[in-house]
Image 1 (cartoon, rainbow, N blue to C red):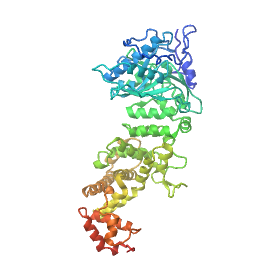
Image 2 (cartoon, rainbow, N blue to C red):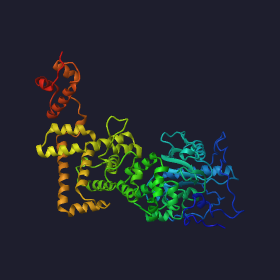
Image 3 (cartoon, rainbow, N blue to C red):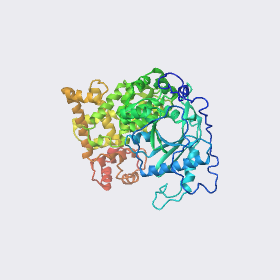
Image 4 (tube, one colour):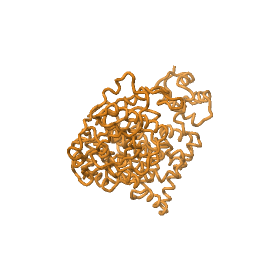
Length: 595
């Protein structure tokens, strides 16, 4: 008799209690399995695996799962040729281990999580989690390697590696409880597919840490420990069926809903990082977060747990994936809607200059402007898009500077948030700090262009000072100007477009800003100044010193600057002409040191 679990309706209990309560079979009908390595001799034979391939038949001694049977998908997954080769290899290995140890639990292999989700959504994936039920991921991977390398490739078959050589590299990830790695896993690549070999797990959490105690578990326990139901699905390699142990994953995938397998408050308390993962999957897939999960995200205890239990590095990893995803605006909007901005983008030493709502206004403006900007200002790849939305996310800090003892001058507040709150690379902190520091210079150059007209020297020096990020800086300046011009709008990018088009004066002001920016871009591009920051001097310091009869010294900086200006004014000029100009105007260069 199977006792149905009440895990889905009981709230607030310990996760292990929920998973285990009511899930065991009646006494005498089920024996707990000793989950240790049952196959110490699997690699010991000098002859390796027996020659004839073992059949792909599903083991006829089924394991008694702890809860009710999984829901089976009505539609199956179509495997690619390489995925089918891999499936056959893994099943052969599992069957061999099962026959070698007839008194032990049959070895059952499943693909888990994201690969199953993506295949059901019609997306390809080369990254597969291979879940093993009764031995560690590394032990099973080692047996797969032995099996694969002991069988020669047939003439028409694809070799397991690009070189055609045996698989020699299996990266062992040792148990490390401090990093939530309680059981050995392994990674390798076979048939061009990147594989993570893991065991089915159950988890038990303490109040002050997101690092659980991990043990071998059942498929149901493994499913219930995951962040959202759409990631709980398994593809059973033996039956070729999709298994849904939560009885919600398939329905939520069809309904495009992000929901936690267990009560969301408990799920997020156990591991607050799941909050950000749910937001990331919602924005990546265009799904809606279930209202119960949203309400739990807004709980003060969850926000505090996100600050206390999660390392800033892990938070930064999730934010980075959001910014690189297909809808970074949607991710920022979700973070704002559940009130998590200060939990994610904050540093104890930095106060915001603008309210967090300005993040959405900046992101809205960026989205609306895409069709109205010169092509050079439109983010054209994932990295440029990431940087554009990172700048939007840090808008509340754009005009604040913080004095640090280790620095000779104040540091841009946004750079500190990147460094301390997100743990992004120093290059990100430097780039964002430089962008925000240069915004005022854009306004000065645009005003000069409008009042004095084009000047190749002036604009060239401007581009040189901004450096290769000048398109990013111009776009960011325009966004900030539009934010200061337009009224506060509700968090919907469509509202901004509506307000601009339906408010003539406001629309005219925005169009004027866009027009001014376009004019500056035209001046830069038409005068071939886009790459002027990398322009090499037409003459070097030694040539200058010889021509003027001087010794190199501090005054050379003035001369090299003047040479750069001459090059801007004379783009077709020669080195000899520049040196002649220097000699004719030597007194004006203020060079006091002579031979």
